[in-house]
Length: 171
Image 1: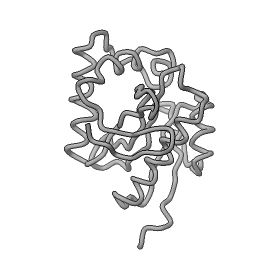
Image 2: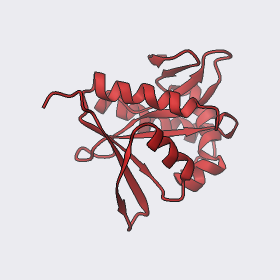
Image 3: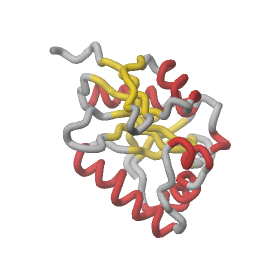
Image 4: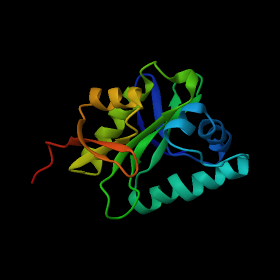
């Protein structure tokens, strides 16, 4: 278990094979399906395949990816948060998703702030995107609270892009 960051209430760590059940539950939650899309994960084995082909592959290729957000007390895995780079030419974006019972408690904001710090301080990214469906108001409000501003809309994919510029990177 590789610890990425921690705060008073949570730890952020790499996903591993023991998170397959959590991935199964999260990817089948109503919010995930509505705002991210069905991943057709219906078994623990498929949850493990998702971890290996997504986050673990990204850790190897980019050094970052989606990480597990774990409650300090009780060690419960609450959600995912991290830096996503979908293809070599794209700008990285921040991603987050939490189990319904952990939504609305500030965990996503806390985890996202840690991930933004990692993106800018460790990886020296000059900007970070937030890509969201226009009807996902809670995520839009979170992106705005994180300091991101609306940039544009991809009408073909029905996605809005928000951007946070790293003003500390030397140009």
